Length: 384
Image 1 (spheres, helix red, strand yellow):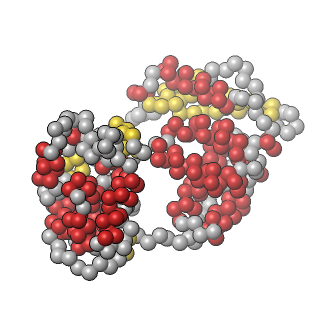
Image 2 (cartoon, rainbow, N blue to C red; image 1 turned 180 degrees about the horizontal axis):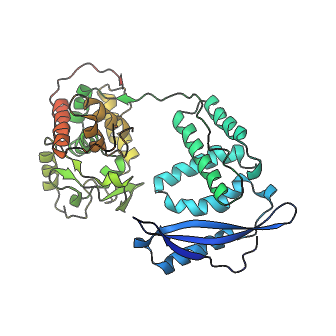
Image 3 (cartoon, one colour; image 1 turned 30 degrees about the vertical axis):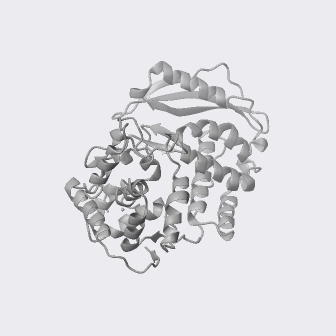
């Protein structure tokens, strides 16, 4: 492919949100040696976050990344496209956890099976048989669906680059797969577990159980995050590192209601610390860095659960799901969605219905008081 020393050109687009949009040409050579010029457009970023010269510089880098020696169509394999085109463009947009998951499914499942095939030869048949094979091997719906989504995204990018005529993965369907049990803790077992943990561990477990926060949010809490009757997500933790300003979604940064039963315990916890300055973590490791959720569960929570006879594998998903289950009858579905900070009520009703903050507070306090005021019952599992 020839470049003709092009820099492309940048224009402003959008009515409500102004964005920079770049243009350049690609020169493709088919099997017969005939050259064809193809226009390519690419979105560069929001105008409010990027000046025009920065957008132009970004476009030049994109052009440089795609105008390397272009292999013949027969050599344009899926693995070549993923590693030379798709990942250089898309990896930077992924959060650390998303990047790890996406790369795992690409390297573990998709590329070993389809990577050696030429892009132009991949058909819907190959893609569907690939997904069916995963299901036959016993992989869960989550794994199969993630592979379907990744394969569709990769081939859509190849379509945008005019390397294929259509996306063969666009209408794939998920085969029948097994669903993992969605376990929850009965409220009386939850109370026994919480009361059996040490003070610090109990606080973190109560935040997980009643504030229904994700592990990265809990271990990323700083004293400035505590605003009296709610937490404000100011960042998250990932693999022992703090990521200020980062959250799973924009909606995840919404205030998180703290039940009344937890507030005095947090006050006691702060009084026990000489340094409770705003930037200090609320629950740091011995080194002052964020705790790793898997280590905390393995060392502190699971041994306690085993001693008191709880057979449900306690983790953060179980605690979040337990809150949602115990919330039934305490508030409406929109309140539960607001507290869990789900983007779509389909993951908790209509997206246009607005949550009433006071009703959310009533819901959270009702669940916390109901659990902490319960009397013990025999240990038994429960499935949602």
